[in-house]
Amino acid sequence: MRLRALLLGGGALAASAAAYRRFLRRPILTWGATPEEAGARLPGDELLEDADGVATRAITIDAPPSAVWPWIAQMGPAPRGGAYTYDWIENLLGLDMHSADRVLPEFQHPEVGDGFGFGANRMTYAIVEPERVLAVRSADGNWVWTFVLEAWDGGTRLISRNRFRLRGLQDRLGMVPMEPGSLVMERKMLRGIRQRAERMAAEGQEVTR
Image 1 (cartoon, one colour):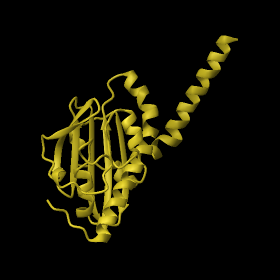
Image 2: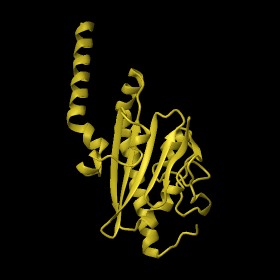
Image 3: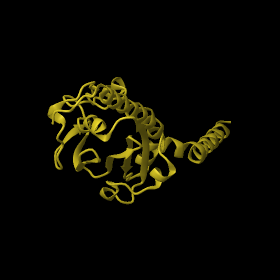
Image 4: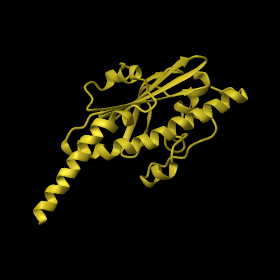
């Protein structure tokens, strides 16, 4: 009886995993992105070739890249500007994130080689092209996170791409629940950036650089 229950449970788990990969995984990993954006080679991809996991998510913002960039440039744990997502969830993980609603002039000049702590990871700026590309890479080289800003019909198309190297079975299994969880957090982040950038554009604010 116990063996039968184990076999049934294992079969249900395998079926669920197969259904997730077939029907849910791609929409989760490409939320907001067009097929062309999801399949494109973007700046920063060269920092981690042959990634085991890739997520490309995007949003259209009714504001120019100059109003979007400041919010990305200052991202990071306190005293930086946070990540514009669910702070309480991030802080349960000890990340000390506090999403700012104002531009922080002291964090508007990221430079290649500089960086910040992100939990157990040390993230270093690998590409900095103001109002176009910002890419950070973890100290172990297993994670690259790139933001690409493209002028789009008077506004901005903001693309966020995460690339991961998953070294072992434990990492691969752990990524399964992480993928939908990352969608929840990143969707909130992209919408948070959009809200702030559009407000800045509507108010005609200028960034003191």
